[in-house]
Image (cartoon, rainbow, N blue to C red; front, side):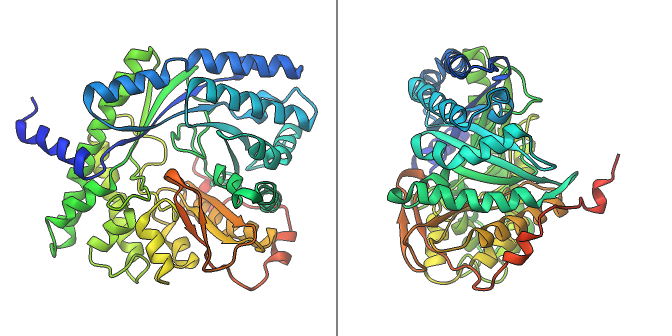
Length: 453
């Protein structure tokens, strides 16, 4: 039985502290859509997505209206297209599939559709290679399609040929969308240890181990956590951890309620709740400000990695008591352009790319929404990806890179993406060259602790 005080507390979290459901994502298997004919393939994909997700947005809006819980995004993830489109032979076929996905996303009213993806951590099939080569064009001619490529796992090591290729693909995507400051790169993620049930874009895809259709929910609430910590100023870290755990429990219970209700109304299995704290550019909705509430003058100061580690761990411990089905990425996101506190920290010089890399060792993903100068070389971007992949494989965690080499921009400039993607201050990269390292190619072997069968 809910107490009146708990109801009032939740209302305050929603109205004053930016508590929301960041996304309801419907995963849809496209395995039965495969065809060696482009038109048949595209028609099957469009028909299946628009049929399965026909009521997704309306259902989310009804739940929001009835329960008073903001649901910010409604999204779709699909089976990696390199698997679905393996029988078609031309690069133009993959562009046609991307357009079909975009039309389906528009027809259903969702914000984004993810799954223009390939899994190449041990090697690439012909279909993987065709899809990867088509990414720049696909992201340039679509609005809602998101792409991801997994280049490493703890079990297999790092596919450095794929890492090198993705540096070139990111550069080409930025150039292909130069009139929008390289916006296409904001829809492209390079992963190590990608998960099959991630509800967040741009990295969501519907894994081969998932049901035919599934509902996954991603919760948020950095503002709620910060407000809770304001009440325990100066307290020792055990109290800080307990406070975050109790708050994460309440946030996750709300996510569990929405997920179960959406599952029931749509007659689709409930998958997971992703416990991640996902920030926005809005003031009061920042992960960086949580870290500063712990006592740091600015996010990026010495101690930031320790503070983030505490936050990430406490969020998971609190959330896991609120639902038996935890999945996705779960923890704390640190996307620079999407977090007002991160933007301020970069602008004032407190937060560097190197410090962000250290923080990715303990956050839920990796280098996210990072803008760098437009003349950054493909090899440098590949080396950044390789570093993140190494952190992921050695630490047996998901890491990722979503980086935007903004055409024509230099350090100190800003890139305006708008909406939840926010404002990206252009960050400095190392001036020292990594090209010879990247040109070696091959595969960095799996770490010794991968041998655990």
